[in-house]
Image (cartoon, rainbow, N blue to C red; front, side, top):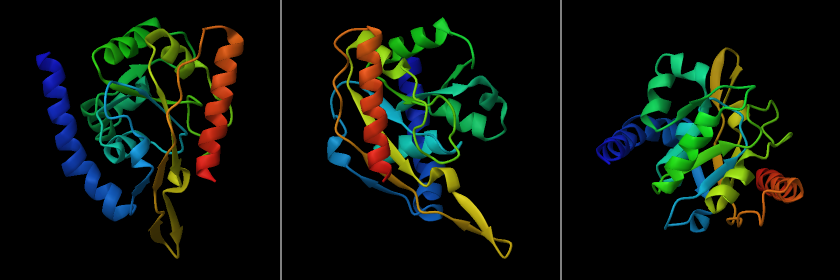
Length: 206
């Protein structure tokens, strides 16, 4: 319990002191669909993924303490590793079935902590959902939690250069209406819900 309280405190400090100025003043971030964010109980955020900055920006914008699965290598990156760890991220080993990661996600959800999953599992060059994985739908079924589709617009091109001058894109985060968990863990039900999530997120991206 003490660890959870301490982690939430660190999360709030990092969010307000470090992430807020980057989100608001560098990327002119804005949130659309705030009314769709559940205010009670934990839930699973399901999003597209275009930038390493997605986890802290998304967590700050939604105003909830959201723990993201992040590839283990990111925890070794200076500064970024500190931020994502402080924000409650937990490592996942890519390319293998990591049972410990699944247990951690379930434990967080059972303790009323929200988790975030990038449905493609890795960054996409076009910023859209291209090859979604079933993990989010399966976790929703196992824990009977709502799935919240979220689109991060322009995160795949947060910075570009013109005449050697860095230009930062405006980040818009769009929140869709929550999805109910699948009725079963059958392949058909998981595939069907995963496809609906993909379509909804890409629709929000525009």
